[in-house]
Amino acid sequence: MTRKLVGLRRYHRKTALTVLMGGMPPEGRELPGKIVHDRAAFVEELRERNRALLLWSIAIFNSFCLAWSALDYVLAPAHWWFFLALRLTLVGVTSLLVAAVHFPALRHRSLEALWLCAFSYGALIAPTVPLSGGDLNAFVLGYVLILLTIGLLPVWPPAWICSVMAAILAALVTSYVLWPDQLSVHRVTTEGAVLLSAVAVSVTSAVFKFLLLRREHALRTTLASTRSWRQPMNG
Image 1 (tube, rainbow, N blue to C red):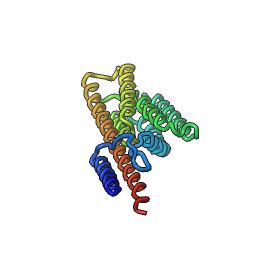
Image 2 (cartoon, one colour):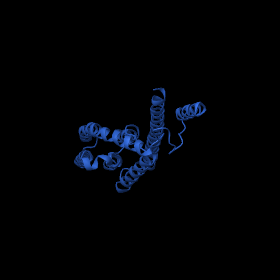
Image 3 (tube, one colour):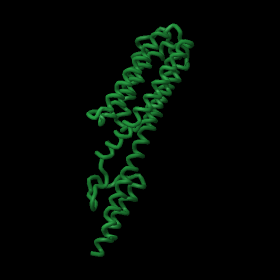
Image 4 (tube, rainbow, N blue to C red):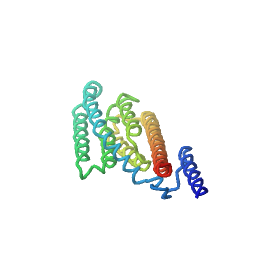
């Protein structure tokens, strides 16, 4: 009996150390009382994090989006009405998505709502980049901030951040095709390099953040299982 208890202690310490060093515990392996790593619980935790994030982040960024229309009037007066229509549409769409995900029946759809909000920002602001004129102007830099924020602020599973960035890039390329009047090879090359670099940084940061949180969740689960097993033994 004593030999068995010593073996179980060593197993728990080894599993916790494996997770702490960046590895993953044996998936589905049952410890006394609990499963070490529950992927479904981790995904549910991500959804809850992002649902809480959606409300305040969209409220803040929608306010900035509308305030930027004042700069549109100064920097691109010829397109001010069109840019304002895009921004009002964006605010309306994202506000509806945030409201929808707070209904009880849709609370578990926060990742889907987050994806649609991110794509709405990328797609509806994309036309401002080719229409603004000039290399690396304020609109390009503003778009870079959108790309970085999408990757840095939420917690994305890798497949989700890659898919939303691919969809945003497709919308951006479509905007360049639809409004090619003020474009040049130099401008497309320069802006393309900057925007693709922002996408790369955004995706890399999002994947790193996801892996870090997944390891943290696995470690918490492992340590909680260890405590739940040791308490009856010590008692």
